[in-house]
Length: 162
Image 1 (cartoon, rainbow, N blue to C red):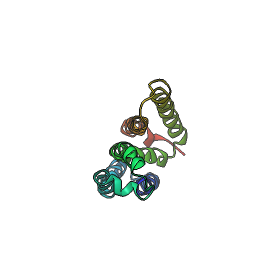
Image 2 (cartoon, rainbow, N blue to C red):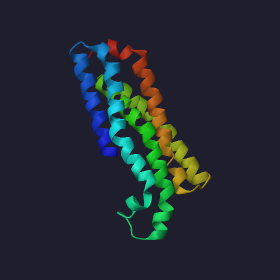
Image 3 (tube, rainbow, N blue to C red):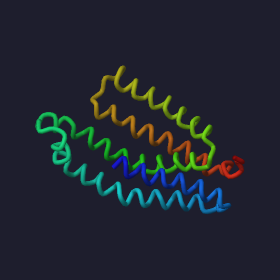
């Protein structure tokens, strides 16, 4: 699922760059929305299948029933994370596609600080189950999505001269 999602996100970043270069800045928001929809069309069926039949999927990795049973909650969390990861990665790649790599780096660093603090708190201090630790993917994706969405919405990227 991850590779499919990243393929659409990366393609969107390239198209954003091409659209800007061709002077079609007004087409960028629609391209982003279209890539999110298409990526969901490919990723969500897999995520739903994995969530409905977790032991079938986990049996590919282990034949130990106890380990399969223990891994089901983590798999569910990861499947649900794709609801946020798809638009987050498309928007992040779109920010990179604007050519403003310093801004992309800054947004990523801000998100990673929050992500690292969250995972440290969940694992080191609260000592919660591993499935809760995987909720860090949701925290990361929401963080990067919000930052990148507002950056793209703000529109100052269209004034950037490379």
